[in-house]
Structures are given as C-alpha cells and as structure tokens.
Length: 499
Image 1 (spheres, helix red, strand yellow):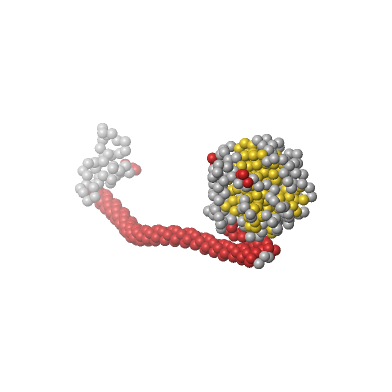
Image 2: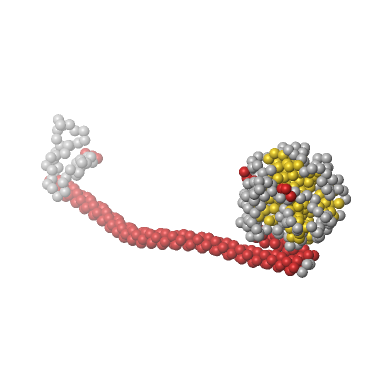
C-alpha cells in the first residue's frame, strides 16, 4: 500500500523495501506539479545518504515492532491454545470420569431395577401366598365351624332322641302296670322332644307341612269347642280312643283315653276311626269296634259331658253292622245345611265275593244315638287311582255344596290318597271331582295320606286333618302320624296350604 506524501511535499518512505537498494526514481518536485513542469534541482549526496539511513532505521524499527507484535500474537495464541488445550483435556478427563460414573450409575440402576423386580415378584408371590393362606384359613374355620355345629347338632339330636325314647319307655312301663295316667304324663313330657327329634332327622315342622303330633295317630277326627281343638284317633297303647288337644294346631297335648270302657259285645284292642259331634249338651262319639263273638267290624256310639271324655257306651248291640256287606267301619258325623245331624260311613266289602266297598249316608235322630232314616249308598270305587277301594268318608257343607272327602287304594301303601266328590245333598247324588286324588304322595313331608277329617276355626276358615306315613317309612309297624293343612273350598274344588 503506497504511503501518502508527507506535508511540505517530502517523499514518503513507505515504498522503500527494508534492507533493499534505494529507489532510483525521483519523486515529484512539489504537490500539484504536472508532467510539463520544470524539474527541481537534485539533492546533495550527503543529505540523501542521511535520509536513506534514517529511512532504513525506521523500516528496521517497524519490522522489529511488527515481528515483536507477531511474536506477542503467536505467544498469546500459544498461551490461549495451551489454556484451551489444558481445559479441553481437563474437560475430556472430567467427561470421561462422568461417563465412567454414569456407566457405574447405570449399572447400579440396572442392578437396582433388577433387584426391585425381584423384590416386587417376591412381594407379589408373598401376597398371593398370603391370600391363599387366608382363603385356606377361612375354609378351615368354616369346616371347623361346620364340624362343630354338626357335632353339636348330632349331640343335641342324640340327647333329644334319648329324652324322647326314655319318655316313651316310661309310658310303656306305666301302661304295662295299668297306670294310664302315668303313661299320659310321660308322653306329654317328651312330646316336644320327640317332635324335635323328628325334625332333626329331616322331618318338616308342622308349620311347613310336617306332622303336628309325633306319635301314631291314625284315622283322626277333629272337634273344635270354643278356641280349643280336640283330636281323636284309633286305639293305641294309651287306650281305646286317643284324645289330644291344642289351641294352635301345631302343639298338642295328650289327654289319654277318651273311651275307657267298652260295651260287653266289643273286643278290646280293636277300636278305631272315631268321630265326635256336639249334639245338645252332650258330645256324641261314633267309633268302630270288633264284635268279639263274630270278629265282624261294626259301628257303635258313646256319649260324654266333656269333649275329652270319658265317653260311655252302654249299648247291648252295635248301632250299625251291615253283615251282608261284610261289616261297617269309619263313621263320621256332621251337620247338614239345616243343622240336621247325619252320619256317613263305609261298608267293608271284601272284593272276593263281588261285594265292593261303598260309602253310605243316613240322618241321625235328634239325640244322635240312632238312625232316623234308611242308609243310602252315595259312593263306590270307580276311579283308577282308587284301585277298588274307598273308605274313611267325611262330609262338609259350605256355600250350598256338600263336599265328600274319602280315602282310596291300599291303606298300607304310598298309593293311598285322598279323593273328593261333591254331592247335591247329604244323601247324594255324589260325583267325583276329577279323575285324580286331591291329596296324594308327592314325597316329603308325608306319603300315603288318608283318613280325611275337615273342620273349621272360629273365623270360619277350613282345615283338613289326616294321617300319613313319614317318607321312607310306609307300612306297618311304622306309625301313621297326624298332619293338618289349611283348606280353601271354591266352586266344588279344593286347594291346600301349610299351616
């Protein structure tokens, strides 16, 4: 780069090379001179040499300064590079250490994660094991509770059954020595235990359709006096006619023997199927008895001043004894729609000589001690389910219709059942309601129901008492126990419900 001329027109040293020859070209004489101007006089040799030396020194100084500056720059750059390199190495070393630490931390973290996973699995396994243990413990406790309850129930059942059996044995012992009062009290004392023992053994309670009385009580009849119900049944170890009473139809108390003495013509131990009706100020009982001279079954009558007895029969002969029809059994008194007493019963028939069993009806005298008209046949077996047998009749009047209940089929089988016919009057005609029984064996709580006995409560609601075998215990010498159902009559049909 050319240096600007110095003031006064003196030539510049900017174009002089350091250490080189002096330029031979002359500088312009003055600022603003033109090519056509007259040249100035050349300087003297001494002065020109001094000027050249000064210029040389200046150039040398400048070169030295420039070199020094360059050295300083280089030194500064070197120092900066050194510091940068040092810092870079330091940073790289720190980064390497950080990377190593990070790798270590990563390894530690992975190990921690792995450990945590193992611990989590162990925790989950422990929780699963704990839940299973808790479930097993609950099941075990349940089993222990069930076992304890079962053991308790079995022990209680054994104790209850033992009380029942002890009481029954005491009653039998009392009967064997003629102490019927002691026998009655013994049975009363264990009646509840015997009923509970049955229920513990799977027999339904009375309110659920089970037996209302836990002892043998076949061919029942029920009479209500006020709010007390009296039930009568075939002879047993307690006497000729059993009698029990209740105020709720589920809990019954034995009152002993309602017919303590038999007429002279009757055989002891063959009295059954009683029926009682309040007539006037007396209670009239009709019952079946065997004539000891002939063995034929006939019907007799006895009276008492109290519904539980004792009833007295002073007759010299039976009231009804249809010898031509193989005898008469199962009497059941009732009142017709006008309050007239009637009696229905069965003539035996035996089938072997072509004489079928039949159901009969006849009006009673005002005192109930004799028939007031000729007997009329009102029903004979004509349905398949009856298998040629009808017996145990009982008639009920309601809303202008007479309902005749009866039993059919073999009495010692599960096929025994209760049928129903409707009648235009106490003397018939009667027609079966359908072709099937209205109450038959359907499994628990009873089998072979029979001996129907309709009655009502103080509100006019109807019930049906009957006997039945316990399931799986059909036929003699098993007991036929007392059952009671609520009963609804409507339009010639009937429906039943548990108490």
